[in-house]
Length: 412
Image (cartoon, rainbow, N blue to C red; front, side):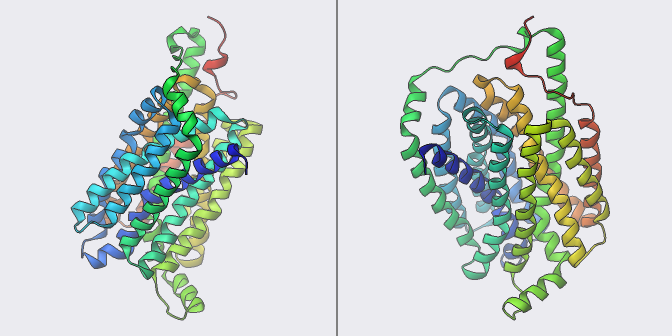
């Protein structure tokens, strides 16, 4: 494997681990701690909320540090920091200690998206496909969180679900440091170029850039509600809606008829298959641009969320796969648009702003999920998500056929 391919592989592993760590607790809460600690599912979500706020709010300083110091250096901080804090969380003795651990996991997890995606969009061509491939790794992290955590709960306890991935992340961080040590030293020695101010662009072009940016950030915020609700709640949704299917699988597999592993397996299958949508979307972005692709995936979400209420077992599994195909397929689109519009010197900071918006909404979504679930159940949540997808579809209709780019703006 060439050094360049190894670098891209480590960045992809980072995206995998980033989403894995942020969703370990989702399965631990649903399948272990409600029983072991006697705390309600909605009550446990309270302890996860600060971590998701940190996941968003610390994206901006992470991007700023990367632009000012070293993007590769910040990736090393990401791997080592999130690994150590995951091990610490696995050693927690109280819900408050778990909440503190999740907060610091969120702090270090915030580094990946503004920094890793800035590296991907600046270093390689075929941006759509690179982002799509990188996104698949991230979504496999989402999928594997349910599968791996369910397996470790059944075979070693919930603490191992935090400790083992933490040790793996520390090892990957040391490998990344060894590979990119020279680039980190070079980044520290070299000055960073300043980005051209938006005010220097022609007025008409500037208005177009601002309009598209507003659409990007609006759809970022609304799509974050959908992404967080589905990825965090899916193990619990499957625990309630797919009991018949999971029991049949468990009986066929080992004769037990129960077990967290099989709920995790079903969630993994949905996430893993849905991740393929990103490769299709990435190819379509490079061929057709953002607007038609974005409209298609938004329409898919409206349809499948609208028909999900009341469904159970096999048909619920199929419809869940449908709305996750739309939700996951949307992920690289906003990053693609930012990569096309943002100047290189400020790219990590702009990605940082994008993820402050995205992950702040992610954090706010957890109380929403808890409130809706406690009062009306998941059927109401599906209706809310259908409405959110409809908002995205309406906003995307306002996109121009060709994205503006600050780097190719006409002279004023």
